[in-house]
Every structure is written in C-alpha cells, then in structure tokens.
Length: 256
Image 1 (cartoon, rainbow, N blue to C red):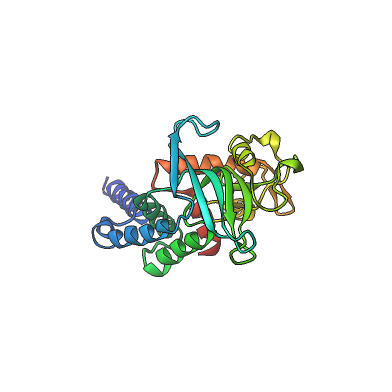
Image 2 (image 1 turned 45 degrees about the vertical axis):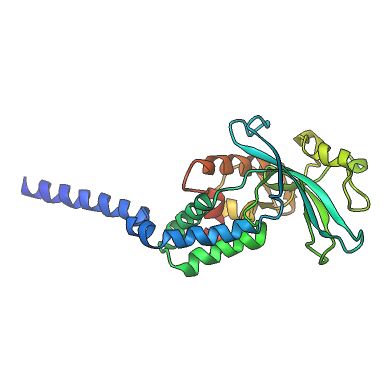
C-alpha cells in the first residue's frame, strides 16, 4: 500500500507541475502584463487603416458571428499622384489586451519565458509586418517597395490574393470606387489559384505551418494553394475568443 501511495503522489505531483509549466504564472499578470498591454497599444496606434469606420457587421460569409468593421482610409500623399489615395477594407483587429495575451501565450509556450527580450521582439515583429491589422477582405495600400508610392494589395481572410479578371485591377495603381467595392465582395471564385505566402498578423507562412505539424494541403511557396486562406481564417477565428493565437505560436516556434 505504501508503494502505491508513493506512486500516486509522484504521479499527482508530475501532473500538477506539468500544468504549471503550461500555465503563465499568475504573478506575471499582476506585475508585468500591464506594461505589455501598453506596448500593444503603441503597436495598434500604428494601424493606419483604422481611420473612418463605416459600419460593423457579423454576417460576412465565413466570418459569421465575428464583429468585422469596414473602414475607409486615406494613404499619405502619393509621390506620383501628389495626393492621398482612398482605400476600403474590412478589418478584425484585436484589442490591446487581446494582442498582449496572444503574445504572452506564444512566448510562454515556445520559450517558457516572459522576458521582454521575447515578448517585445514578437510585438515588434507584428508591428513591422502588419501593425496588428487583420484584413478580412478589401484593399491594403502599402509603399512597400518605393517610399510614398502606395500600391494596392487585395486581401481575403488575412492573406494577399490575386484577381482573375485583369480588367478589375487598377493599371495605374489607383483603385476606382467600383474596384474598391468589388474587392469587398470577392469570393474564392474571383481569385487566381495562387495566393500570397503570408497570413496576418504575424506573417506566418505555409512552411511554418507544416513545420508545426499542420496537415492541411496548403501547398508550398512554389504552389501556393487557396486552402491557405481557409487555414488562416479558421485559426484566426479560433484565436478571437482565446488567449491562444496558433498562427502567432506557429511563427514563434520557427523564428523567435
């Protein structure tokens, strides 16, 4: 009986300590978490497309039940047009606390540490990649290659996509009002088979996903299948009401 009791106690201790390793210590939320939230607020203050909210809806196909907001926004002064460009995009951006919790959970799971060398590095990465903006659908203007030259990128489910019909693409890199509205209504049938590589908000790619054990047939960097849109969409939706964002955890496992 004594041997059984000792075995039972050792097993119980192992289960308790295993659970503690998986759970962020409570003292972190009392002492250091507020500073992480403040850092997340700074990141979200850079969300340049969050300008003029037109309405919020929870009926977008594939995003039913999620509070997606349509924003109209203006870029900086375009160097060739000599005036700002106007964009429209549906966004589902996290709050500062939600973003902080996602980052904290990823760092704890991947590094078992809440040191700012990890949490701030991850937040800064997200800032540089997306300013924590998740485009559900619409146009994202970026001066990615030439400073102050704002080029349009069409997004769906947090991923860059490409339109089949070339007549619907702005030849002069400026979207017409009709084009902006069309990009808010696109379905997968409007898209070319290949999509962009990265999933918002942490620029998680297919290779990161597969290395983390993902088993959906999303293709690879040379064959970028549309299935990636479904994966990014469902993982982000799962994260919305959770402290865990698997897309961020997946990226952190490979790069943090």
